[in-house]
Length: 249
Length: 249
DNA sequence: CGTTATGTTGACATTAATCAAGCACGGTGG
DNA sequence: CCACCGTGCTTGATTAATGTCAACATAACG
Image 1 (spheres, rainbow over the protein chains, first blue to last red):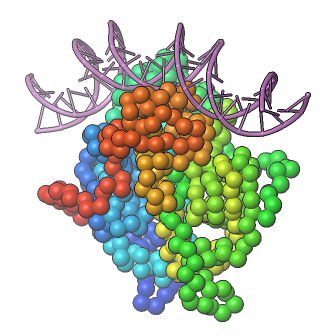
Image 2: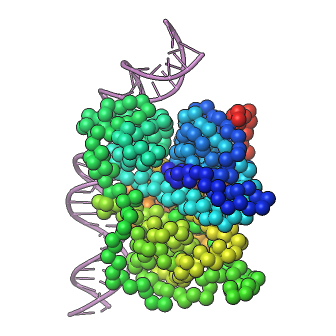
Image 3: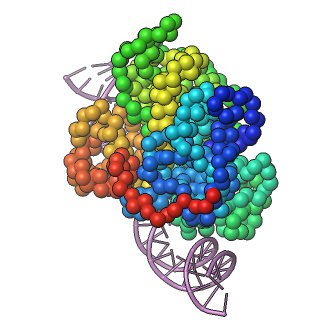
């Protein structure tokens, strides 16, 4: 996910500042903004567009993608409610964003956003946190892409999508995106995606393929297929941290 | 590169603050710190270690990597002089960092670093910029990894390494890292890396393979092999930007 | 109810991984 | 100075995986 998986951190309108509003967190900046609706497939902005606004996803799912010269499409992330779009604060958007499902967004002018953030140090903290998470997500995608087998990639993808489910730790993983989206995210073809899903179904790890979701039957098997996974399991870090002295000075 | 390609922005000790030093930019925080030397292969810190320090690379090259459960190694970036290590400001380092060549670093305590940055808004700006660049780099790697052929990956890798050369726009690209490092960065095997280099040499795009560098003979051919490339060429963005109205509200 | 999107499946081609030697450079010690 | 050894790199033969091309099935849409 190029998306920040950070959930909403809703409301909590705490301190109140002068002419500024009661901006408790980044989300509250968007709270009063009108909702804009986007139909599936509809673009929100394009890579290279002047970055005039920051968006917050209120509902639905979007894809962030980059197009290569020869027409290939690379999906660099999926965005979910609570995520911010265009947060990287460059002059131009880094990628194109399109609605996957029906989407509701709120937008905020980038300049004002920057001003607000500069004014309030707690917002700055939150923005750092977002950027940091977005960065981690981008790196996680890189790790995912360098996994060898199609099976491994898909197993990881399912776990990833499940993790984002709003707390619901059910076995049913929502997949609002098409197979082509999945393929372009994992760096493979639709055929291989399809075949691999069938294979996982045949081996009983998941239920027979549905169009827009996957039901995991053997979670542990799926986890072991996802295999050499690392992230998120690392809460304690019981590293040896031994003799390897830091070098001279 | 998980590295920020941002060059040094050296010295420039401008304004002077009270008990704080004349902190003109992030780099100047490190200026008075002693240099620490690391031999090739030596680790600086491990993924999961408590992030006690931020480092600035003064000289040499390092690799940032993550290890998967089954022992596979994924290099998420190479770091060069001027880059910062551990800038993501999490409680724990996100990846292991090891010296590739002989390296000189300066370290700065993370807490103090955060304090300094929080105190000076221009430092904050710079830190945002760094994070942003690091994020872009992580995304670029994802794009690189999802490229189909080995040839395409390597062509891009060479161009990438060349871009980082300190202004020297020569045809000789420095490669301080081993083939294994390259393989683990591009998500392929050493054999394929080796074979592909040989192939590029046979077709006259590069000179016969040297151990620690590549001489590009036909830059334009290399560029076309790198193909669907996007980033860095996009200065103007002459997008049509037409009828696609943003949706209702 | 036909038409288009999307998804599945099959046969085949191509690429890169794997297994296995062999080569070349750099360092060490005789 | 040279023989020796180890590491890193190259090359070859073979295999396994995924991409490609093509047909078909199914769901979605007007």
